Length: 366
View 1 (cartoon, one colour):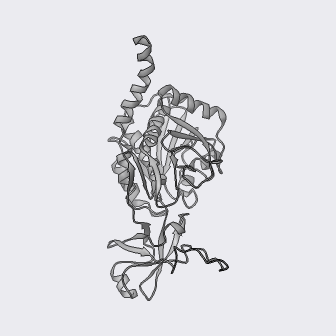
View 2 (cartoon, rainbow, N blue to C red):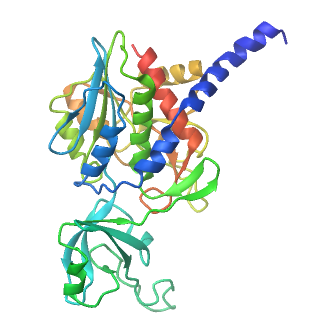
């Protein structure tokens, strides 16, 4: 093969590789995932986001703790939005025996937290506890026995190692405190990990990294808004508030694509392999992406050598609330396994491809 032809083939790959090498999205993710922010209580996450914005950026923040900033001018106006809240619980009451009863803050799968460690975020600091298991919780009912009642947030309590309400309150525990699973990183291999709250802290990290790499310099020929909204897991409430004032032409909601890339799930629906690139979501329960816009995203990705996949999923996305204002919703994602559990899995290559895709769209969207 002649040298000139070889260089033309390799140049896009070299450019993308260099961009990926500059990405800090993975490092940002491993920081932001540890910041507590149960839906409706996102203040600490919003603080984290604001401290990581590029110098010179003038960010807005409302009473709900939505954070956003806008650069450039003219049309089209494109919006990238990721949700900063996570699944968890809030303290409902403390029992006379010193146990903590909770209310759910989103759709975390209760069966995944039985007998697992949690943290209660109090005014005095984080208090560790354990979700009390049922006797024989890890055993199957014997043949002929009636199945046990479902294990729900309303049916479990949290053990703190104390035996009275006074002792629990002395630790600082009070009604309204938030509760999160105790997060640990399981690194399967370099660049492949599982932990709690990858949904949607990975989206937040991708936007922060893209904003950092874009900087505060001029964006020509278009208006670009980055937003980190709240209360997605409990009803898209933060996005709905932003939609009252932000009227983009296109909205790219950046959130998990819930993939069935796991051993026991059917591959007939929602299957996109982890590790094979960013995702443009064609259909979900809240929106249908126009074919023309999917093809535009694919063309940009392929021009830049960015690995990309197309998928259909259940669930909704924050971009759907902007449709009434005239926006076209084009959800972007990464393939994630074991969504809404304690072991949400993500591949670094997918996250960095997503960040590269965001920057490529900013550069080329018309």
